[in-house]
Image 1: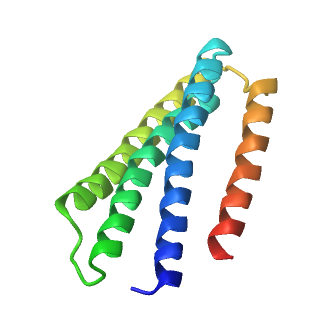
Image 2: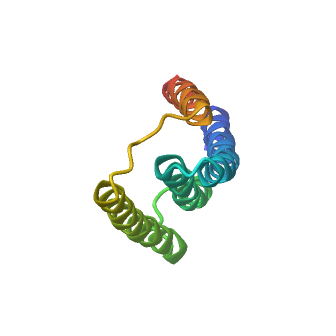
Length: 136
């Protein structure tokens, strides 16, 4: 492996770690404020962040595996992380659909919260930045 390739793998590893830790923080904050403000959307956004943490861990392990042996097959850990991620998104979707249905039945109107706007704005900026530095 060339020095340039080693640097790229190291860069990818650090980006994956940043993504994992960012999603943990985003998830905690979103769930706390979603619970306090009684907003299902913000709480669900926090749950989504934790699902992304599972995916991010799978990606980090994949980077290490490919770095050590580029021709190796996916590990059982990676396959399990992908399955858990997929199933978790289905469960989250069902939960949100039920929550929305209950809100419609109870005629609850959606409310915009300051924290929801702030967290969404920061999340969009971070994702744009991650996309930019990933394709550089």
